[in-house]
Length: 178
Picture 1 (tube, rainbow, N blue to C red):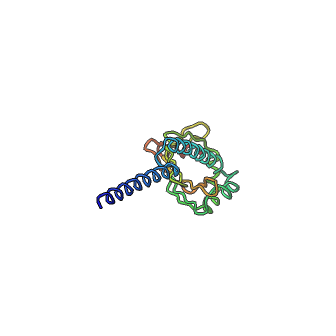
Picture 2 (cartoon, helix red, strand yellow):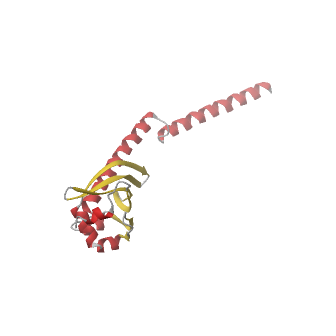
Picture 3 (cartoon, one colour):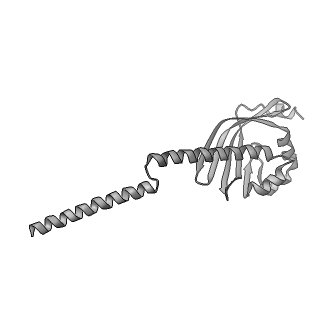
């Protein structure tokens, strides 16, 4: 009886060790806690971040009077929404109809800095600061959050929120450029 108990205990121990080894192998195969998985994730993150940065640049090049109609058909989500630094909120159709704003964006040039990029699955969030210039003259600084959602392989521009920076010139200076 004692031999049977020892044999049974040995078999159970061997079974548990084998099961544990199989789970470790399955975890490695699934990409959990391995050096190669960490490196692959880092490479994937870099690729996604580059894609998202390219989508952000494309957004600023195309949210203009000349390009918006075509860009908004392919690269902007249907539920797009913006809250602008001047307090104006708009959905996709309202922004496309706001030709004065699109013409203004087309005339401006921007300098971006302090940008942070975060990616959570298929959602990309970019935060930073930007300075706006008209004819080379600095007219405003704003803080921004741009949100993109990856849909069928394309980072679609989904949302914008801008806030005047404390360093923005007073509104009277902005109006002098008319």
